Amino acid sequence: MTTTVADYLLSRLREWGVEQVFAYPGDGINGILGAFGRADDQPAFIQSRHEEMSAFEAVGYAKFSGRPGICMATSGPGAIHLLNGLYDAKLDHVPVVAIVGQTNRSAMGGSYQQEVDLLSLFKDVASDYVQMVTVPEQLPNVLDRAIRTAMSRHAPTAIIIPADVQELEYSPPGHAFKMVPSSLGIDWPTVSPDDAAVRRAADLLNAGSKVAMLVGQGARGARAEVEQVADLLGAGVAKALLGKDVLSDELPYVTGSIGLLGTRPSYEMMRDCDTLLTVGSSFPYTQFMPALDQARAVQIDIDAQMIGMRYPYELNLVGDAAATLRALIPLLERKQDRSWQEGIADNVRDWWQTMDREAHVEAEPVNPMRIFRELSARLPDNAIVASDSGSSANWYARQLRFRGNMRGSLSGTLATMGPAVPYVIGAKFAHPDRPAIALEGDGAMQMNGLAELLTVRRYWERWSDPRLIVAVLHNNDLNQVTWEMRAMGGEPKLVESQALPDMSYAGFAEAIGLNAITVTDPEKLGAAWDAALAADRPTVLDVHCSPDIPPIPPHVTFDQMKSSAEALLKGDENRWGVIREGIKTKAQELLPHRDES
Ligand SMILES: Cc1ncc(C[n+]2csc(CCOP(=O)(O)OP(=O)(O)O)c2C)c(N)n1
Image (cartoon, rainbow, N blue to C red; front, side):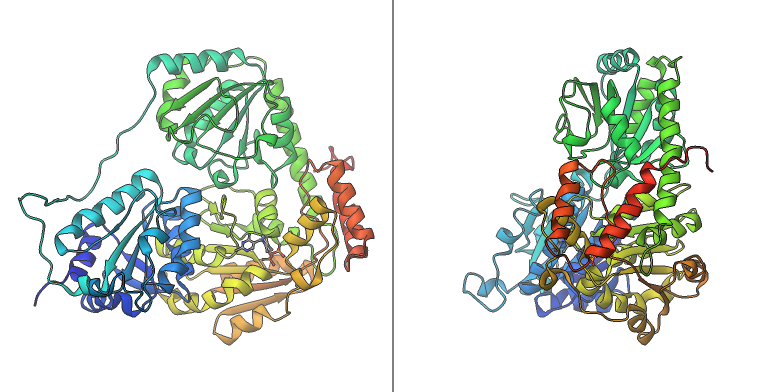
């Protein structure tokens, strides 16, 4: 039997260690589908309900495995559907390779059915590498470069293979003019800055007396080093959203998230520090950093393209986080005065008490924060958690305490709705032995999650640990938008835009054979989480919760409070509930409770 280009494509993916392709079929990739039929499930074809979900699954897989995620779609509409997921990969710096079909070469340029200019379509999202394979000899080089580029640039790349090329007999590139042979694999260097730069950074950090650290996902491999540096410098450490799982929230000096979704201790630490050390983060919101002339600052980042932005850093050190910190550690003098770090630890202790009180504010019927609070106490050490974009992202950032080997992520930069369920599906393919939990609003559920539960149903029996839990914040509202309009624009809830059609998420889950629990009483939340975490199959937790709890950041400005109040006075349908719950919630931050445990 001859080996087609498509057969070779799959064998090369196998050689790269690719175990599954997140995909959806169509006649633009019929040749590749045929090859899957001959490939004995290696790699496995994992079918989603929508190509955007395939791309999100590849992103989730890559985020939680550290390996490139591969997604595939047909030409035209299938390729177009991939885009949002690929942009999610691009903005969060995740290695994903998209493989798409195209019409036959003989039809190209003929405005043929499903013919879209795919090179132009992917030009921006896959700006690091997008190529069309037009002859068999081109394939190994294009595929290998797409994979290597995705890994080295932490970015999406794309390969376009016309349908007729997929069916051609494979012939390798030769030892000849205009042939481009290729090779597998890559060994990475450990990049560290030169000694003089490290010395300058150490001098700057030794000179400070109130050091704040900001860590992001780039510090993931440097947990022990970050802890050691924080101890030496007597520093507090804030975590950018994508770096929430870099450092344990049980460390007393970890102030948690920063920014719009952040904590008060992070906000105050940045407001009051005299020195800033940023490691592996391109956190975008300058207004949550120290004032521009307030702190002397050092940044460490592996990517020279991303360094030096967001703050007037005095020193920008390009290097691997762990290697650079290891070089720095012997040069740091342990701060004798520990009062700055102790003050931060006091604030952090207070903050968690406040969060607990806020989560216990009564609401009609359930306070959404309580969902996260009850989960936080029960999270298994090896849990993988994904949040969607919506009010859940606020509670994910502020209410969940990570420890152990927990992993967590969300669409940090694109902030797109709809990735939470496909992310945890990707996570289960990366780690079938770990429990995975998606937290998302009913809007995101209606947009993507519901349909993708069918994908969960299809595959869960393959996972050695069958626990995949989707908790739905059932508030019949696009609540984050409602609150943004109230707080930023002083506008009341626009019912036509934000009210959602009601349905039973548990009923849907039950109807397709998943475990389902409906919660309408906050006192039953803990038991519901216990049951979901003990279940022998995936579970949907349908939690009826209040839309009246404001996801207001800890540093809310007077203007925003005033805008919200004005919006309510303009005739917001939820005004009485909002005023009641909002005031009760905010009061928890102001009440004296330092001495309570
Ligand atoms: C694809 C996409 N469309 C629209 C938005 C704007 N947006 C951000 S949050 C949100 C509402 C989310 O509602 P829901 O999922 O019900 O969660 P809730 O905030 O109610 O908890 C919307 C519409 C977005 N981020 N992404």
